[in-house]
Length: 275
Ligand SMILES: [Zn+2]
Image (tube, protein in one colour):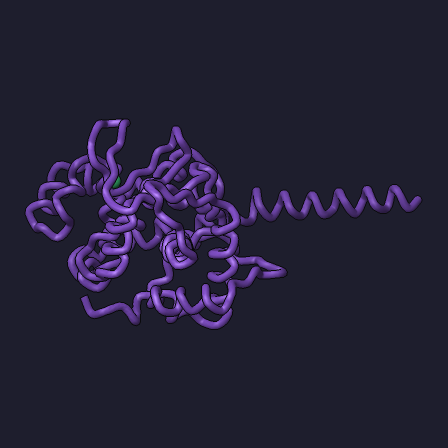
């Protein structure tokens, strides 16, 4: 008898889960443009005091979060550090600080997504400065290589982009944006679906000749954005985080699409400089 009861309980739970994720969540996403929930961590992982201090010092975004959200952010940074392998090249010693700043940039970019540990890359390769890439026989500051499942950075350029917060250049956000773009095309988890829906609206600004010309004449997004659709998305996300107020005042509709694309909570921008 007990066995049949257990099977019945199992089937009921399975049924509830199917209804929840196949019926309720898609409807919710359709109406509200975001997943049913983002954070559900029964035992959130913690960082060391020192690691947390680095986040506090380096990320105004983190400082602004509520106590509860800080716990989620901390959990995600910890999971990021465990999920990906860091490799220093040309005798570069990868420090805890480097790891936290790289992880923090990624977690900030993906904080509105439920599924954030993307398996399109497994290693993060860090060079001391710009490095020669055999793939196209040129010096690179960074790249996402889906075949090698790697994201590579020149640390010199990464940290410069991270510390200069109003020039619309942020190498970390740029390369990770390429990862999100690929993920949005290839995957069908709720956050990838939402990303791709809004991505199509964002990219229409690139594809539409008139809109594209208007944007490039205006000169807000740097020229590199107009190279191709991949660079367009990456450069736009750099601007989104570096000069959100200016972006929003210039292109409120495009700003809203980018915001929905990564399900970003705009309140987190309040403490950013008035750019
Ligand atoms: Zn790029």
